[in-house]
Length: 341
Image (cartoon, rainbow, N blue to C red; front, side):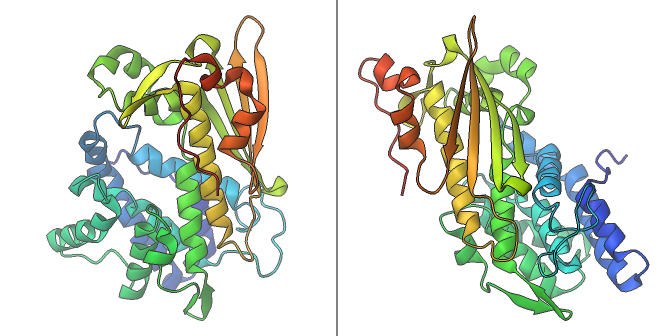
């Protein structure tokens, strides 16, 4: 029984671009065969392999693709609400194919271990192809490029380390490989928030979730919506936190962290991934800032807005918002390490 067969807007746009051309249709159908296999038979086990972690399964894959729909509306003419795309800025058919394939494969390495799971993507692909005696890609060139993009989704400077060429050519089209790698990383980072966790499950079962994992669930539950706005070159993060939970102490690594500190740290991490993405943008859409809209829920809700960009981040936030700074409220508390460049 097929349980994950729905088509997202970017997949539909990809299909429409190749419709009527039998050579291009082959790319869509090889991609879609990968999707049906991975989402129905492998990503369900990725979820089981990571007890206590936010969603790394089929829902995570689908939501990344939904982020692409918003992020790339000015770069893919056949997306819903897409304006007239300027010449030279559109993604071509093969770039979309590589991006979608890499997205499908990027987390499957978790089946062989969480640590450096990007290094296990190729071994997983090899296992699957050997078992089914089937090559899931049109040719070895796009297979290699897809693996490079998928492997680059994590790790320090992963795009440069894993993707050997900045640009290449394929079937008489230019392929901006490192841009695609940066895009996958950024969309993966934005796939955050309460959509990745189940509040009812967490509240019922949190005593069974490892103590050092609860902080990630609690942080996700605070983030209500993440909204890429390409026309404004910004991403808006909408969050809410109850005043009584601001300084809730949660385990992380070797210490305990206030929930509000971790929430700000996570948004700063998104901003650092945004800056990394911008190193590879070139002709494509720019994201110049992340707007953090947070409401502290109280009898009278307190709205706070702070803009993360290239010049201000985690440290600047706390300098500007001492009223919720845990160092000011918790005796002996130290903020997490300085992360601004």
